[in-house]
Length: 312
Image (cartoon, rainbow, N blue to C red; front, side, top):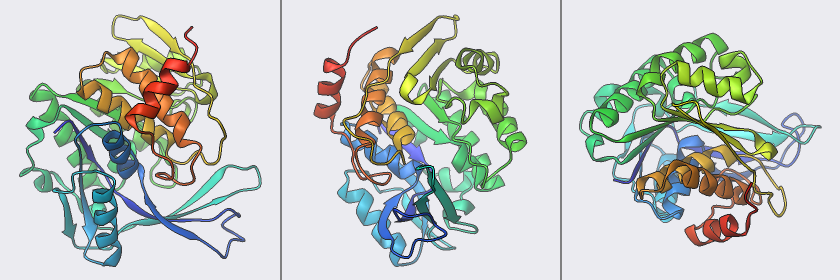
C-alpha cells in the first residue's frame, strides 16, 4: 500500500448561498480523508482509505464513489451509526461556512481495535489529521495507534493538524498535536489557521520551529497564496512559492489535495522539496473545481504545472 489514509468520508451538501438563506443544495462526497485519498490515487499512488461508514444508502454511495475514483476500498467497512455529512455554503465575505452532521457517526466510533487487522506495516506513507482525532477519544487513540505502527515499520507519517473549532478546542487539539509530534515525519500546519490556535503564533517560521521542537522531523507550513515554508530538523528552511490557479472557484479541500499528493510523491521516492511542489500544484488545480473532489489533479497535470511554475 503506497498511501493509507485514516479518517471520515462525508456526504457533502453544498450551496452557493449562505447556509442561513440557501434552499438548493448539490449532493457530492468529500471530507478531508476522502479528499486526500482521491488526490493520492489520481496522482498515481495505490491509495487505501480506512474508515467506517454507516449501514445506509449514503454509506453505499460513498464506497462506490471512492472506488470509481481509484481508491482501494478494502478497508472501508460498515459500522453502527450513520454516515457522516456536512453542509457548506458561502458567507457574505466569500468564504465557505461549514455545518457538520456527524455526531455519533460510524466513523466517529473507530478505535484501535478496528485497525488491528489492517496490515499497516505495509504502508509506505500514512496520512492522518487533527479532524479525525477530534471526532472522539477512540478516534484519537486510533490515529496514534496507526502513527506508531507505521513509524515502527519504517513508513512515513504525514499529519495535517486541520483545526476545526466546531469539532474541538484549541487546548485539546494542541495537546493531541504535542502527543503525536514525535511520531510524525512531516507535519503540514496551515498558517495562521492552525498555527495561531495550536502553536500561538501567526509567524510561519516560528510555527515551523515550534513543531520541530515538539519532535516532528520536518514541517511544511502552508500559507495560501504565499506558498509553503519547508523546514527540516537541522533548522534549514526553504520557501516553496505558490502556483497561482487559473481561476479560484472553491477553496474546499485544497489542503487535503496538498497532503494527499505530498504523500503520493513521497511513496514513490521523491525527495521532500519535490513532493511539496507537487502537492502545491495539486492544491492550486483543486481550487478550480467546486467541492472537495470537484477538480482532482492527475499526475500529468501536476507535472505540467510544476514544470511551468517559476522557481525561486
